[in-house]
Image (tube, one colour):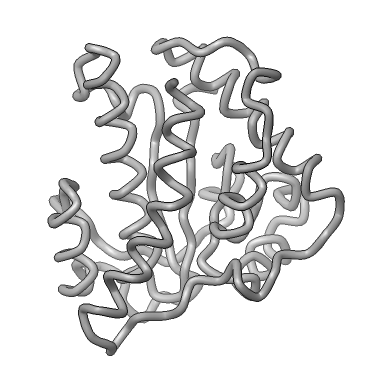
Length: 203
């Protein structure tokens, strides 16, 4: 049950998924400030965390260019340590957002019953943009209200997907080993989904 839990997945869990994890957390905090609610309560409402399909970087800090993007956008990198994806993390997630369709397939192969709540991040953002949020349960800043609205949102986006596969353009490029300009572009693409997600959950 609450909080509404979002699991972000990429390959090594040091670039794309940790950026998405911390940027969603930051977007939720910003919505709470706007609503005159203590942002410290953010994790009681939306729990944003991440893991990688591979364990090569387990225990490592966020890749420095990724960390710079998070900090530059008002987020925090404190306490982050890369993790390998486990089945129980998928089971506990209300929404799984992957960096690419390959990782989406990996998650669904590991847990077929998670297919209806697993999306490529760009795919989720694209479908979310066409959704009528007025049809969702009412908003509120209680754990139960956010959870009810979040789970209904995932069901609605899955219905809007209507069995179609993600588009190639929904994938996030892997910025590892590339320059800050690439990380900046990928971070922009992440924000194009996580900011609207936070807005729908808490508007």
